[in-house]
Image 1 (cartoon, helix red, strand yellow):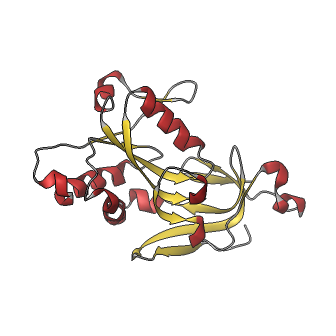
Image 2 (tube, rainbow, N blue to C red):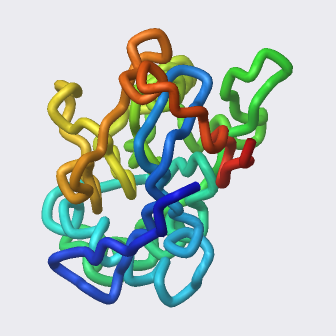
Image 3 (cartoon, rainbow, N blue to C red):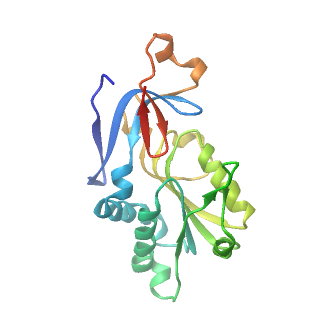
Length: 213
């Protein structure tokens, strides 16, 4: 890859930084101009705690969650998010409530599902869905479909990065969006101007990383 990675600090809390790698990337559905390396935000305990504090803000006053459902490796942040809500949430301090943090599994058809002993934590419960990143919305819609099937009531969606926040009717709480990254673009593979210029793909994006060609 010809361009060097850089960091984008969160305006509200500059100690939280998202690593960005420019290039020509592909996923199963799109070509992208940048790869967001979110691993440090999800795995560094101190950083994940700071991230959780920021993500908790919309839920402190009136949202009353029973369960936080984490996908794409966000369970460390999810645990800190639950802790933050229990300590600072207006409705939680005066009640004897609990918040469960759970992760769905994928079946052989790559559909999300919950094991039998976890389903009671979803059915008729208030759910916060925590997602690593949202671009096309495929993973998000899959998770929402799963939660609907199991009877969950989604009261909030939070993510570390939302590529195009304007495309979703439902409110999504995001730390970062594509507006924080100058020049960020997402293209259909058959309408990619980078390919039209004759530039080869640099890497394929996989779960929590990428593989160079």
